[in-house]
Length: 343
Image (cartoon, rainbow, N blue to C red):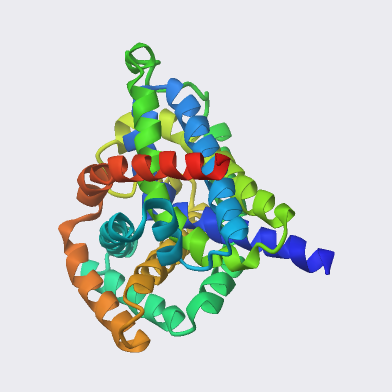
């Protein structure tokens, strides 16, 4: 029984960590936008974000286990009451849909940049794959994450470290900027963690039923946050080296991978496709929880179709403008969660 319980904590950690491993992260676009552009001090920003992920993950699971909460709706009403909780849940559902759209946009950009396939085709293929997973509910989400998480973790660490140390003379191409003194790097890290947790919390609340022991709570929250921190640090290192060449690209890491041959590019593409697919599925699943009063299959089909159309807004535009807009919403929720967990 103890082994089963420990594995439950690991499953939560895998799903939780996978939420953040989307196209924005694996492509390098988010890492550049929120960390790398500040120079080496941005690495400390990644660590700060990772600590926020870990502590918040533990707090959410602890609250759910203590209060017997098994859904995101219950969780929000516990945090904020009936009226404000319902408003917050609606806002979060909108953001979850935006993130789902971003993953489809990332799929379209990847298909276009890597294979010269039309943007629409790439977005539609991933939308159809997500629809297939959604038909199986939570069980489908857990299974695809357990299957693809090792690809993302091992592949991501390998891609990041290899492309860094294989560089002829690893020297950061951007220096420690004024952000180190203005603390903009810290604000950027908090914004990054905040908007990511807008989606991370609903997924955690939906998987909280797996946390049957205090050990599951610790493993699920803290390990999930720790894994994304380690992976983020490994993948950020080469971005510093190639910064001048990749800063304006939709999929920066794809440009780096292309310089190391076909095998390396295939490994990276496996990481990227796994990341955007799992995150698209997790976000779509969490958004569907708000639409649970509708027919599950029809709601999933509508969500995927509308998402594929909306993806044409553009991947980098969503990362640069839509994501930060929800940062304050996420920060407010984080503070309330921490206070409730400490109560």
